[in-house]
Image (cartoon, rainbow, N blue to C red; front, side, top):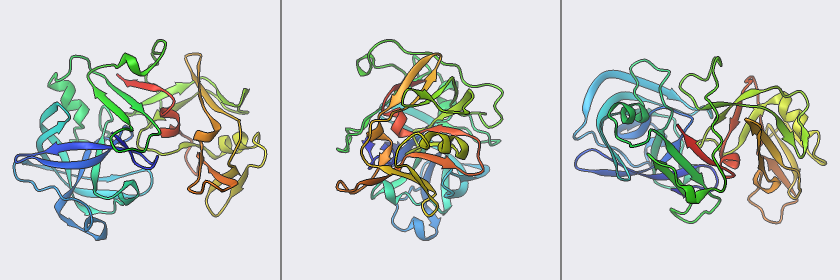
Length: 312
C-alpha cells in the first residue's frame, strides 16, 4: 500500500468484468466497499474515477454511509467480483455511490473510494467483504495483518496481508487481546480494552480501562476531551486552540504517548504525534485530538505505525 501523506493508506482493487482498477483507502473503521458510480451526482464526483456497473447484480437495498469526519456517500448496493491482490471475492456487495459528499482529494489525486474492513456491519442487509471472505472460506487463516510505515514513496507504505502473518515484520511474540465486549458502540468494530494510558512514564490522570478502536482510516489518535486535557497538561508549552479545536505544542520534544493491553505497553514517540507541513516551524499541532461530545478512543495511524496488528 501507499502512505497518502500520513493521512491514510491506499491500494488497488479491481472490480467487475471487464476489470476496472481503482485506488482506494483501506479502512478498518468502516464496513463496506464504497466506490464512486459513473451515475454519481455532486461536485465531489467530478474529479473522481468512476465505477461502471457492467457485470454487477443489483440488489433491492441501498445505504447512506457517514464517516467520522462528517463526509458521506449514498446509493444502491450492488454485487460484483472484487479482487484485492490475489484474493478474489465473488458477488461481493459494493456501495455504488450516486450521491456524494466524500472528499478524498486530501489522499491524493485519483482516489475512488474506500474498502471497509470491519468484520460485520451494524446496518441490516449490508455485507462487508470480510463477512463474505469468511463465509466462502477464501483464506487458510481468517486473519488479516497490517504493517504501516511512515515512508511516503509509492507502494512502500506497508502492507495489508489477507490470510496470514508475516513474522519478518515484527520482533518478539504477538499479544492476543480479545475484542471488547459489552461496549455499546463496538458492534462489528475492532475495539480492544486498554489497561492504562501514559504521558511519558506517568499514567494519565483519571483514565480508566476503556475500549480503543484500531482504525487505519484515522490519521490521528482521538480521545475524549477530558483525557486530552489531562494528557497535554503534562507537556510544557502545550495549549488548546479553539480555532483549530486541537492542541498546539512545541515541534520538538521527548514525551511519549503510551497505552497498554494485557499488561504490555506500546508507545508512540513524540515526533509521531505532532503534525506540521513546515520543517522550520517551532509550534506544531498535536495529533492526540480531543473528541467533543464523544466518550471514545481511537488509535489511528500514528499508533498503528508502531505495531504489527493482526485482525482475527
